Length: 466
Image 1 (spheres, helix red, strand yellow):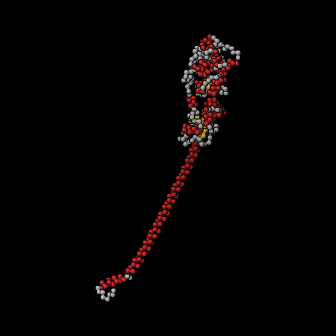
Image 2 (tube, rainbow, N blue to C red; image 1 turned 135 degrees about the horizontal axis):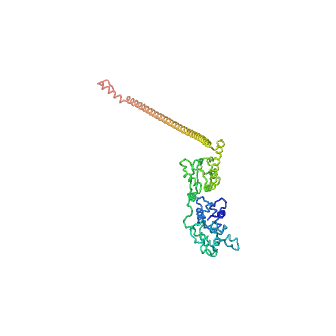
Image 3 (tube, rainbow, N blue to C red; image 1 turned 180 degrees about the vertical axis):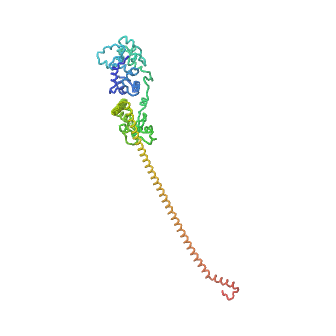
């Protein structure tokens, strides 16, 4: 069967409220509430994942049609809510098959039929007997297939033909049966979907190095909800400690500083590049054109497509300018012109290489000058330190010399004082000795003894008076 894309487009436009060309999770949730379909956020997320094989987080028109053809939870929801969109039989969304009979006229209140519950709307089209409805009739299954290009055999069981008064509607049956528990339909999860489901993903660049390095992808844990917890994670994942750098602040590509965790989360959801500043001012000249333009376009898949288109247009314009230059040279597009253009490009590349080499040499010379200045400062500091040490040693030697001289002078004074006291003591003893000797010589006993001694020497005491 061929697909009636016009009718499906009307259904898709009812979902696409903002007219962006794709249906987000919030728009799907609002539409399900309008359909009075009770779905938990996890079930809505699973439905979006089944219909979104590329993991972009949004379902465009082609993915919507593909999801309806495959069957599954989304098909069950739309098959039961066909009357809400103005179609009495979802099989009419696919052309080429046998036409189903026209629905019976509505109740006396025509406006109530549009707002009637899906139960009545789903059971009325198959109540009238016909060859097409009899051929389609089959019992419902959990995972229906589409062998003939439609959704599946869209015929209710015998009990469902009783209408609103008896039995259950197709919507209730297929919504309750659904796919088997734990079984995924459609494509499996991609790496991007897993990263988004785990938490916030940051594409971080070091400031002043955005145009000469790849982004460091950082997946923040779910319990991380402040910038104070984000900065150590950025420091660790980008290995800034090895480069003697530190993560001081975070910027957006336009230079706006990120001050709150909410701003960081909003930028991460749009896959915006995060510029990590290490204390230096923000350098807008290092931001590449594609990153800045991607941020200005609002991020997401649409921004990536626009930026890609802009880059293609710029490349095309450069090619046209180059062709105009070749034509203006008077050679046209002949092989001679191609060779001339090639030689011109070689010369241009050589000039650019010489300029870069010259700038590189200037940087080397500047760094050598800085290193020499640093070495001179180190040598000056060492010389000053050595001079201070020598002065300290000289002061210490002078202090010791003065101290030794003082000690020698004190010893000399003590020695002289001891000699003086000794001389005084000796003089006193000599005077005392002379006095004792004089007293002894003047005594009568000494005189008598002396006379007796003289007698004994003379051998006679004649003439000696005692």
